[in-house]
Length: 325
Image 1 (cartoon, helix red, strand yellow):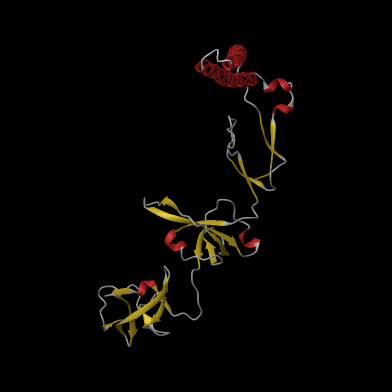
Image 2 (cartoon, helix red, strand yellow):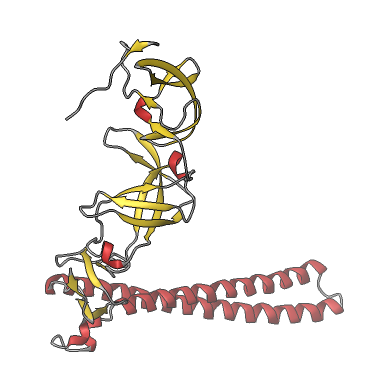
């Protein structure tokens, strides 16, 4: 990480080769000449229709005077009125075409303006200085080498290492059990476990393919640190961590290792050791994690159970405790 400075980088306009620039300018100049001719032609068309409209109006006035004395038929009067309406519409269309040709001419003229002629090439005004919007450090340089940059393209990432949060991609089946404010234990990052709390569970999931090629629906869960900064100050941007979210908790819970449970019909059961013999005890379990299960009924505090029972163990089988070093 490098400390962010006032000016992070400079953007300069692309310099075009002299030959290509000259050819492009000549093409634009030819387009400008054609645009000027189109404007002149549109102006001439407007004048022509204005003259025709003036003549048709005078003919209408003469026809109206003759119609009052019944010197001309009614149809001639209607035709004179139609000529006036037609020429008025044609004049409006011609004026609109004239405006279009003038706009096209202005567009070509604007493309002929060279932005580099406003200042000498040695001037620093030709470049844009980008400054950091916040105080922090450079986390990532997206565009390292000189290249043409499109509008809106990211160039660098800036952040504050003291304002970290953890974003975990959890299975949607696990995310529905998590509530905002739940306690979290964070480990697997190389240091001592860190405590945190859930501050957000996204309302929408996304598809992610696991390392085994299985499509899974994941949900982003945001976790904030609840301990002092000294506990997580060595963490950095994009570090890997493992999170353990508490979805349920209680005091004085009777629990057994999950490795002691097995199915017997439709019930959960364990092998409880009594008087040196293994006896099947059906149990009712409550909440369950990947390691332990809550026992609601079937066992008492202090009962001994067998872990990972094999198929050689039957009800009333004699067993003994294995001595481990």
